[in-house]
Image (cartoon, rainbow, N blue to C red):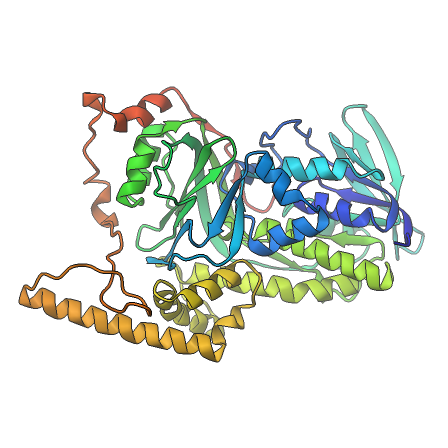
Length: 523
């Protein structure tokens, strides 16, 4: 492939920055990645990625892009201990009290901790002959020509060598996280700042690695229990590398999971189905409890700027930062880099920023819409001001009712959440027909159940689906209002197996405290 420039500089060695370096290596003779953190040799979490200590999802489209950029990546990661998963056959996914119907979609998901995944991507990038990774370095200013129409380099401070230098560059790609200084740099150069959009969500994550007995989850390799009632709480339990599971407890809207190990388990007990709780209680805590706070979604509208310098792009979380609950961050960054590759292939760096942001905007729109709808459907959320968003939130419930009964609807919803299909995929006539049919049968089943209950008739609980509409499988209900006053009995005095978790955790404390507002973490 023909080179279009001599030197490209990438600011940030998170997932967005690493993927940018991989793409730019095809078009520039040299690529230098500047990272302010010290990059770990092993798969440890680092300060610049505080969300790395918590459950991460690599969505289907993101996994496919990684495989395109790094052929054989999935096999490499699996060989290194990552967990392959038959979606949705080995995934239990519950949204607003509805569990997506379990079946094989034909797609193999890939589960690993964020540090493990990033380590392997970083190793692949570092192996590219024309790419150099420099850690403990920080960019402090952009360099321009006299007319300030083009960025010509970046000033970098090397904290290890205690030197300061100007790196000349044909292109600077900033993947510096949501706390990116690019808007301030633009302002200093006389350019407008991008508009910012966002919604307050106020999420607190608390997570720990745990060891579970083999096959204790009945074949499930990931369990996600979304917010259903008040108080707004959620749980995610993912099998990851090294025969470990990562348990993340989530509080929304001011709700906060406990930081101490015993309270951590009690909080999980209020959310987890009985068999999941049994497995966790018999498990062993393998790490400290880490904390991550996330206050608001943020999107910077670079696509609306009419004046922007050549030779500069802001990407990754610098461009958009989503609620971590939906696992979109890494995949949206991968989508951006796939689009950057297309833009450079077609017309080089000519009018690059305008073409890139115009092409990226619809992709971000889809992911952003999913986040806004899901957040707006939560019981503590206030009404969204936009009528079309309120309508979409209202329409979500019948889709979920159908998705727990119909494999086609469940698969469609899975593809939408995985960003391989647009949200409008549920509007296909065949899908709408299945949604309508499933809701009619669900309503009929609910009415029959109410009548039999009123008459005192006892009937067996059987799973109701479009394929077998003979009843409704009871979901796991928890009385959250009284849960704190009616927790399960503590049988630890007897020294049984279910006490292993409590015994293992004593002495551990809270780690990784982060208050993540509009600064810090990089995708």
